Amino acid sequence: MKKKTPEPKCKNCRLFDPKSNRCAVVILYGGEKYNLPVEAEDDCFFENEFVAINDEGQEDVFKAEVQQARFWVEDPETGEPTRGDGLVKIEYPEGFFNE
Image (tube, rainbow, N blue to C red; front, side, top):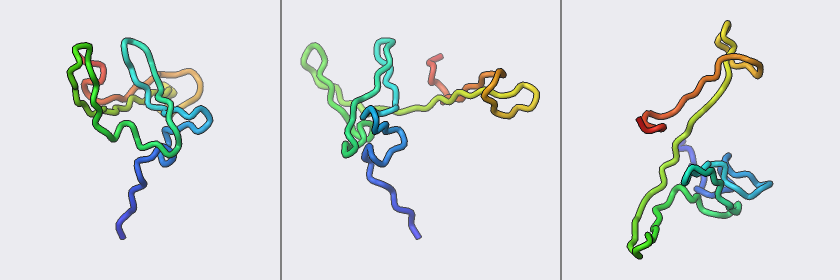
């Protein structure tokens, strides 16, 4: 039996925060962090191609690329995740922080 893929709507995504109506994907722009305001019925912003108009009035078409970085703390003796003091670990895709 083929598994049904949910529609790419905000209400179907675990990154949707219904209390604030914001997407939890952080957009880094000019050194600032932004979260998009969204509605539950909105199509996923990151599933589309976008047209940006630059200062000269020219169009630039681009597709957003969502990448994930994970952080957690491990007990240095056991290597198990902990909520206390320990070693901070980070997992991210190659090239995430440029060089």
